[in-house]
Amino acid sequence: MAETTISRNWLAKMLLFIAAFVGLGIWGLVDALVVYPARGATYAEYAEFKYLDSLEATGEILRASVDDPQTELDALRGRRKELSEEQAALAAESIARARVAAQLNRLTWLDALNTIGRATPAHTTFEQPGARLDELRGEWATKEQPKQLSGLDIPTQWLFVVIGGLGGVWMTLTVMRVLKTKYRFEASSNTLTLPAGESFTPDEIVEVDKRKWDKFFVTVKLQSGETHKLDLLRFQPLEEWILAMEKLSPNYEPPEEADESETPDADAATESDATPSA
Image (spheres, rainbow, N blue to C red):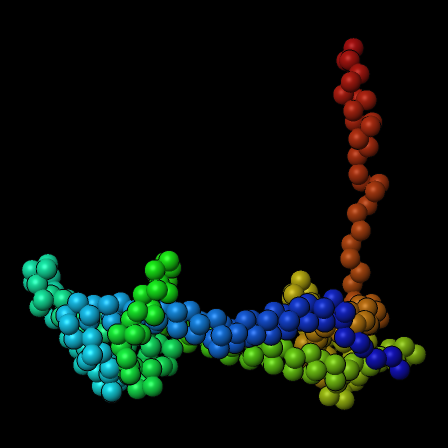
């Protein structure tokens, strides 16, 4: 008794899809754990420099430390619009405007740290803020302003990890399920045995419904009233077996062939048209 095997073409496509999903997951994981945090840390450092620099202009750099960054961040977020409007209303060179600018820069700095999960006292307190400013000033003297990290950038990468992981697992399970599924065919009696154990012969076939043949599915209707939808894409040589059984079924009608005797002879017609009339 012959058994079906998995289609090599279908398996190759599935392996490509699995590789694509796994690649997407790995790409997202590297971005979420390495690339985006590094970019966010670079911007946070630049924001720290701008904050300390603006605070020095107010003469209050010794008060740069933030002991409770989460509480301070929430408070500054609530005052963002107010601070922006206040800054716009104050004179350009006034000390009051410099203080407001320092508050807005503090908000930008804390927000950048929060995006990468570093809004903690360990990253927001300074033993020597003046020395830290000098260090950052020398580092950023020749660097351009980096791109700010969006709050959605890292979560989006984790979404790619989930999509890649679930997609890869689902397709792998699909391949494993197909590998375990077997159709069996006994050529001597033309009997097809389905994976669930049912079997039938051509004499039992009422109709082979090919309306979804282009999608590699066929539905076999039996005298008992049962119908079986068969997947011709994944299993080989199931299509050959079904076609062979269809030809032996009681209701099989061979396709009509064109009658060559009724086909006009093109050469004769051309010759007749070319002959002048008397």
